[in-house]
Length: 294
Image (cartoon, rainbow, N blue to C red; front, top):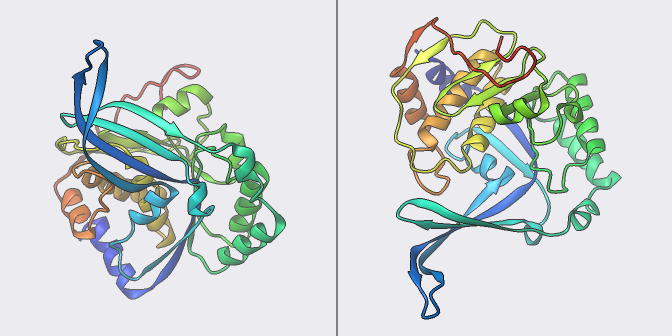
């Protein structure tokens, strides 16, 4: 039985609540082709349009196929969702435009009543994910309150972070190599995602899985899917290394399908079963300090 099969069994035996709190968005995919206008400039001719959840909403949706898991999304009202327009030609994103509200509008939603409500939900949750795109919903004070309550109650709190690491004191931090290159914070327990390669956990004896690369149909939102499955596995008391391995397989399944399709648990299990484990490790250089991990 691999790790995912073990997680499936634990989910069947015990229903748990996962709280996902943060910036939800709308991803609008406009498929079409480029053409030349009469005045010689290029224009994009729309052929079809698809809308899917993004950010925290995508993270929550990523767990849709885990029956027995109660996922609660806490974010602003949908009319406040920022919209990311992606124009796609021949399967490739050729242009992106972000339609956002002023952050001050969103920060008005931050108040003691909202904080009190979330802290009450945490008491009945097994894991918390802070999906932070720095769009205004999560203030530093709000993050601090959540992190402290999770620590008091021994509840794993994962931050899919975009701001400086110190904002998320006490959380398990997940970011890509570019994020850690900017912030140079390599304290133990930091999770570094590396595209198709296995994630790296600082301060751990990492084990690299030699698995074949998978076709990447859509990478947009793969980090949301990774973070959601990371907190799911931690909620069921897998170790950080085990949870990261499960999350990586979930991400590998996710990128093989278009438009934020939630992975099926059996697909994640099959992906993990296809990996041959060895201890060759990875050489992930991100340019901080001496320039390598570890």
